[in-house]
Length: 278
DNA sequence: CGCCAGGCTTCTA
DNA sequence: TAGAAGCATGGC
Image 1 (tube, rainbow, N blue to C red):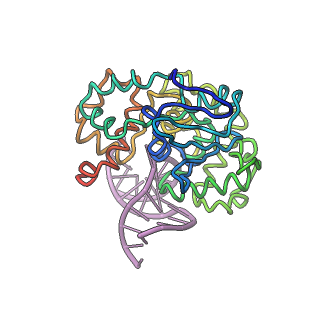
Image 2 (image 1 turned 90 degrees about the horizontal axis):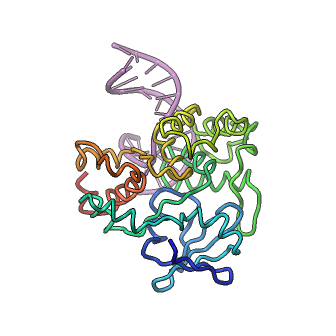
């Protein structure tokens, strides 16, 4: 996206290809919260950011220019040509409806460890409680920063016990979090390789962790490793596939099937005329 | 009270 | 090797 302007600690971009209301609320991230004035605040790395709509622009504050270029540009995937990708996806009639329903969804490129850990917590769970567990995880084991806490690293969690994690109230998932932390901290699972190796190899690498199956692995790959070809299949996507793609998802769109998945997920759950028929 | 929540592991036939 | 049960917790 070339219409991103840095201006005295404020980043302006257009609101056409980035709508915070759907991007932050479509189930891909858990550390952004809506403020009373309609803006969003969330922690990315070591900074608390705020994203606010102003007319047809978005204003992102909380980062200096160096931080923006090094961390936020990749996080928001600002250098990817979303309009061009969406044009291709819209050659499919179902995707055209899904994209028109909420055109401002972007796939965030989050930290791989944070994403993996978050989606381990997400299993058989609902979004408000997922956010609560993650909040307590950061407050208990992360580092304090201005306005909140960082997400604890795998190294910070490795070596802890299930009893140590009791304050999170994460239930049966605590042992999975610890297994992930240990395997990542001792390099038994190599997160750095996941963005470059073949997709199946990346999934199998992640599934060495207890409590990580195909769905959690694909979410970590799509939302945390920039693997836009990863296609997480949950109950909603299963319904979409069964009804709209009985012969399988179009082969020619697989390169960006992860982006397509997120539009379909949001569409199936939030478009009333579709959701109520499932 | 029972059911469900962006699943996965374990048990069973 | 498919299919169901069990899993912690909390909201409704």
